[in-house]
Length: 196
View (cartoon, rainbow, N blue to C red):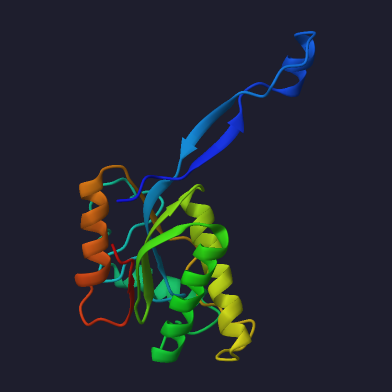
């Protein structure tokens, strides 16, 4: 694995430096980039109470059980939806994968692996940003690219409100996440893996 890029940040405020009565050079602390496993679903495809299992705000701790199947909750979630569930065909998956690669390059994030499925996206990314920011940024950028390709109506809801963001601290966790994203999703669809 390549060494993490570092970001600099002053640790004394301007007021603190001015109060000291002398000009001083800024001192810097370096923060390394962190690797995340990010997963987000398409709009309406993973509803709370579905038999496949889901996680909600009250049941989102690592290692906690998935919600049990509750057909009544699924029906309530479906009634709240104002558009049909969104699914991606091959052309949409390819546009989304290209958008992920492009956005990561623009932001100087390192995309280690990605798999765009019919109804969800997995990515392993190294970034100097919180995973929620990365996820929201790539969702927006992918939507913009899909709009430019005129594959959907511009007002089409494509993504679920949030997603799953996991911090990967150890090299073995990163390797396991990459294998999960690339090899353990069933039939390969739109897949990217960084070459070593």
